[in-house]
Length: 393
Image 1 (spheres, rainbow, N blue to C red):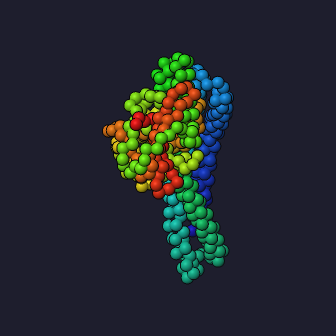
Image 2: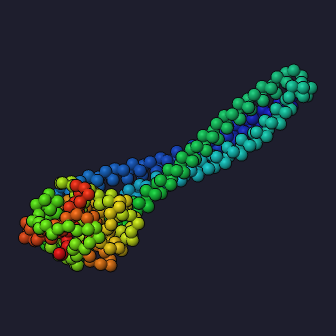
C-alpha cells in the first residue's frame, strides 16, 4: 500500500511541475507577443503609408526636388522594413529561448520518467507483482497507477517530439529573417549613396538635373531607334571573331555621361541577355549598384561560349532588364528596361567582334542633334547580330 501512495505522489509531482512550466511559458510568451504584435501592426501601417506616398511621387513631374523626395521616402521605407524585421527577429528569438528551456525541461522529465517507469514495471512483473503486493486491492491500485504513468510517458514523448520540430522550424525562420535583414541594410546603404551621388552630380541644381534627364532621354531614344533598324549604316565587309572593330570613347560623349560600351544582342526587333552568350570565368568588378563590389548589384553570370567584346579586367556598370539603376535611381524616370549591358575595360579601349560575320558602321542623329555612333556585326552562323554603342571607328 505504501508503494501505491508513493507512486501517486510521484505522478502528482511530475504533473504539477509540468503544468507550472507550461503555464509560465505561455504567460511569458503571451505578454511578450502582445507588445511586439502592437509594434509590428504599427510598422505595417507606416510601411503602407510610405509605399503609397512613393507611388504618388512617381506620378508627379520629374523634378530634382521630387526625385530627392522619392529617395527620402524610399530610405524611410527601407528603415521601417529593417525595424520590422528586427522586431520579428526579437519575437522569434524569445520564442526560441522559451522552446530551448521547454525542450530541456521535457527531455529531463522524460529521462527521469523512463527510469522510474522501468523500475515500477520491473517491480510489477507478474510473479514479483503478486508476491510483493500486501493484498489484492494493493496490486490492482499499483497496476492502475502504472498504466497512468505509461500514458503520461507517451504524452510527454509526443510533446517532446513536437517541441523538437517547432524548435528546428523556428531556427530556420530566424536564419531567413537574419539574411533578409542583412539584405535590407545593404539596400538602405545603396539608397543613401544613390541620393548622395545625385546631389553631387547635380550640385542640387534643377537646371543640371533637367540637363541630366535630357541627355539620358536622348540616349535612350537613340538606342531604341538603332535597335529598331533606323540607324544609317555602311557595310564594311567580313570580320572574324576577335578582330578589333572600334574603340570605346574615353570620357563623356554624345548621349553618354562617361566612357563605356553598351553591348546588345539582337534578333530582329528583339534583344536578349548578353550573359546568355558571353563566356564565364572572366576577371571583373561589379559596379552596377551604388558602389563597386556591393552584394546588391545586378547579376554578373555569363554562361555562353562567345569571346568578350573588350579585354579584361571588366568593369560592369549595368546589367540587362530591370536593373538596380532602374529600380533605385533617377534613370527609372527615363526607362524601365535596359536592353543590353554596360561594360568598360580597365586595360584597353579596343572593341572586338564576338563572332565572325559582316561588319557595319552606323550612326543615328537624335532629337537633340547628337550623332550616336555604333558598329554592328551580322553573325554568319545565326540570325543574331550584335551592336556596339558609344564607340569611335
